[in-house]
Image (tube, rainbow, N blue to C red; front, side, top):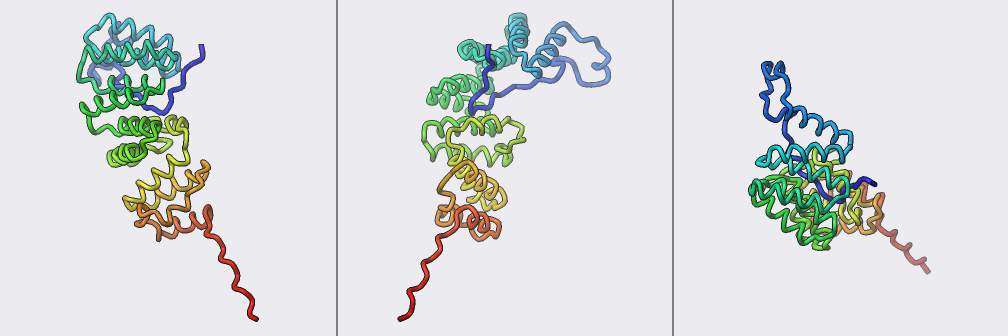
Length: 263
């Protein structure tokens, strides 16, 4: 079976330590792992190696043995979603929310299953539930922003991306903690997307990051980069020499016609 590459979403992994129930100190380090700890370790190894069917099997076993631990169902759903089993993943995430109704990560991931099937309104609803429980997670704001972007609700997308950047200015970096490079590659209109991010940085007076995303917008084929000269959102950075140089390079102003010859 072809493994499933997630579209413009970021899953919440709800990471637990190497040994979920052992204390991380010298005493715990010398304590033999319990069968449960061994299963957790094996499942994490499978996930790291992208052996998702094997990971799903172990997490399913852990979920059955520990029915009150929603984290195992969450991980089971992630493994299933990576396999392309969106329906099974949705059931696992839904079960996780039943076990723990305040499990914000599971609601985010439930939204991811709807996003994967382009049911953006349902995805947005689940992302909003996640944010109602944990309102300071930048990656969930990026998720809801991607959903609004897909729905062509650009003002709402912009608002969500702005909130994400307010929480974590590095959330859209390719080396960021949330796997945003995967999300970025999945955006349908990357040129417009990058121009929107450039605008947000410009409004905050951040010329350096504005420059990065203006360059990306141009490189992705966005034809209206030159509008930054007249867009009020760019007023704080338009005089920056680097921004001006970039605009002159990628969107030069038309050369005025020569004056008519004197008679």
